[in-house]
Length: 234
Ligand code: SF4
Image 1 (cartoon, rainbow, N blue to C red):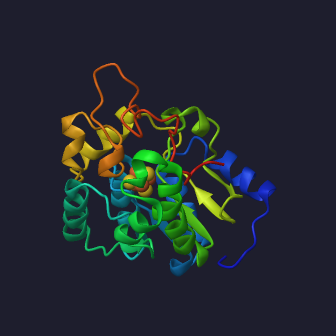
Image 2: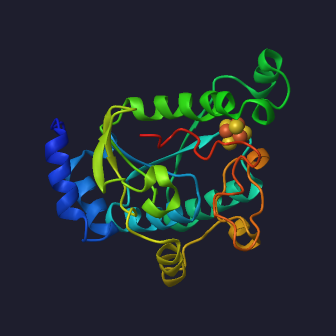
């Protein structure tokens, strides 16, 4: 039923229906209800997202996948993207800031991420994300409810009021262990930084190793109150 305008009530009913059916059912609902060009998976190449790539491609081999290249990604992140491309015959679409790092430094000073990470994320992530989502009717994300308080009430399917499209979160009920069980069972390529105490991986300047017992997202924007890049604020 491509092109259908979904009301929030309808999406809530769909979400309730999918709540206990598992990630693949949510993905199947998405591909059944949105045309190929209207639906895309946002992929950061973290553990949740590589699991979703595996699930999505098995359901719909030509599904759209996009990523945000902030120009500050780890080389290990680029490496896992290349391995996923080869394994699944996919071609993730790149969205990047129109402002180069040099232009950013000229306007705001060197290493904006160390002084004002919100502004840096706005420039290097949020603006490219808006561009990526502008032509879509729905996006798929890898957020889980137990990752952060702001994600605790995320529905399986809902209206994304920040970006004005349907948002599908197939992994909301999964724990990190569920994700890793899936990755191992399906031999999914993953970012090797996960084996070096980096449970949550963003840009290189803003991601630190996490010590045993620390919150998995403690390594993101260490020293700042910031815990989210703004992609999933609402
Ligand atoms: S995570 Fe850091 S480097 Fe990346 S866009 Fe945000 S502030 Fe900038």
